[in-house]
Length: 224
Image (cartoon, rainbow, N blue to C red):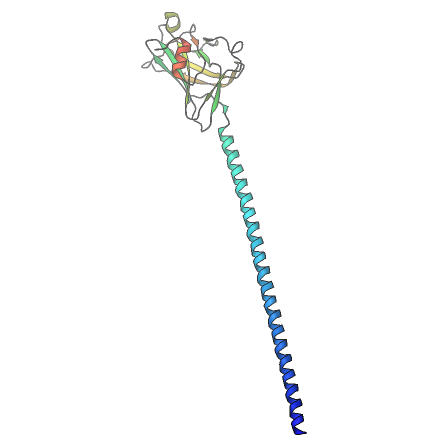
């Protein structure tokens, strides 16, 4: 009888141990699965965040590039040249005799000069005539683009006594014109010293603007 009770007790203990081990294994398996799922979810979340950040940086970079391109295009877009005493100067040359007007563009963008300048000698109220025809008639739309920090030239030949005269110029008033040859804006008033005389009379004529001085000389008939 005693032996039988011992056998039953041993069987009961073995069954209990098996149940405990099974429960522990199940719990361990569930815990492992939970950790794997949590790790996978965390990795997936980080991966999504990284992708979102990359997209944001890509959009921000594209926007910045677009703004930069727009600013560059704005800087490169030509504007209308403006007259001023620091932008226009007149120098006399001999052999052949000619008065050279130089327009300097000090800007960081191109500017446009139309046709020929409008020139008034001393206190005259009548501008000089044009060498190459009246811009109002034959040269509508003709223009020269002056590059940043570059020059353009318009020449006044004074190769004859009638166009040169004997009295030095006191001043020149130089105005710019629009695409129709009409005066635009204020003029530049150029005064000359008696020690550096300039010569031209009301009979002289002015050529059109050119970005090349040699070309301006050829058009004015005073090439060297």
